[in-house]
Length: 494
Image (cartoon, rainbow, N blue to C red; front, side, top):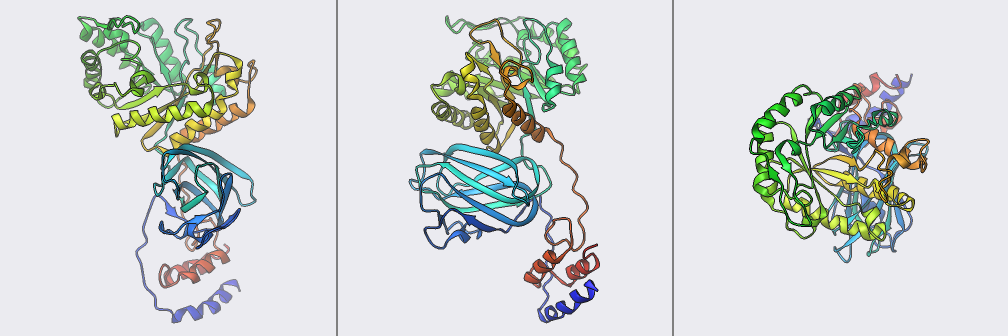
């Protein structure tokens, strides 16, 4: 009966000329949507947000906080969102926007905050760590801006394939070098990591058990080869440089035999503040990293520098010749007077690094070491800032949180992430722990294979019903054909 009714209604459409278009296969598709918002000030109104035309704007008519909300009209799996700001003054200041996703009933699914320097007409692309299913509403709340809140467009994209370059989430300090204590049992409780940093281990008697623990917990490892190459580290206070072993090639070949036992574990090689703190000069650093690259051309080499040289632009670009991945450590939530002030400085240093070595893969090293318990309260806000930067910066591949294992009784640096993330710890923060767990799991999750599409499911919601019929009628002849109609009728409400 239902199919007969559909056929009768469709007879009118047969008078419309049919144009057959090839169907494109894309990783993501821009969705159409309707708008609700706080206010409307300038024409052409809220429709400018979704008209796919950057020359039209929608100005809410006031300073933050303000929000706009998109209704996708039915649930979709979302892969990314692109915000095109309309700013006046056009640049030179930070803006903050919280992007929130809700299901069909309006319940929250996921949110993240973008806090960075933005410019007029320069799109901000937020790529989700993994595709987000069942999204009906998307709200963009502007928390901070020198400009009235105005947009040239907000585009939401559907897609089941992971588009984010962000693939790794983990922690420093899974093994305590000083005590040789392993913390894998604690990390396994979180079940949110796929990588960790193993530094300071060149003794085979300690290295093998540590790598065995990484393997048992299905974690990839970055290991530090520095002590194989250098018998004396530099001293920043005196300027004395690090000194290479004369037979470092032989020592490396012996060390390499251990590495070759763990091809499934070793993700790459890690260098910690090589120039700033251990004073490894460029020629010696290239001797080390060149040797490693020759032995393992397909492995990552990650250099995490301190802020000293990056902030004053004194880091030589050729230092990174064999480096594939970069990052830096500046813990603004601990060392700055407040998070807001520290974050502006962090973004400036981040810009210096990405300009110095364009195209390198980027790692975000987050706060996780505190002088006092009061600093712990600032970590959740700091983590959100790091996350927003990671999700909006191309080539960002991982987030490494510093540091897990306890440093007590080495006051004043006694408090670490386990103080807040591990249930039962003295300063356990359930909300912060849940957030780290959720974000880590979404980053390391393997993409779920998309189910086979149902013929006639025009809007892609997994059902064939009147919503699909209405979409087909609206675009029949330009986007859909009689072939699509027959598929819809054959599978209607099956």
